[in-house]
Image (tube, rainbow, N blue to C red):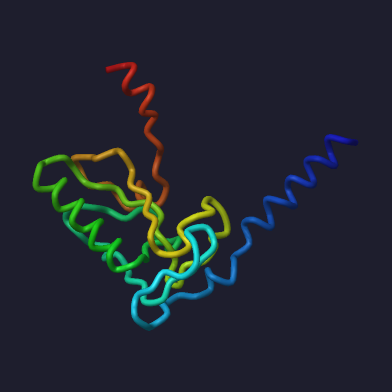
Length: 150
């Protein structure tokens, strides 16, 4: 009985964390001069910019989550980094989560990324561009195992 209660509580807790937050209902950036407000784990952003989804040096993963917005300085940083990696023949930079159009809390996965200043950059730099299916459900690379087998 005790295990059943624990399993039920865990199921209820996971269900609430998967519900959309009010921030996720905002589909466009808040207009205004770019400004990060609050902290990385408790904030929002005005004037966020979408990272262009089609670029030579990078690919954006999980675009269905609408987490490819950030402060214009962050967007420019990603573009510079990916251009440099591409020009040096290092491969395609894989971009994970950034922020949502107005920032704010995700329904799961991160406490940060709320003020438009965070980005997840995967350490894999594939030479070939990933397919849409790979970008929607990326598989993590075990760097410890890869290094041990090298």
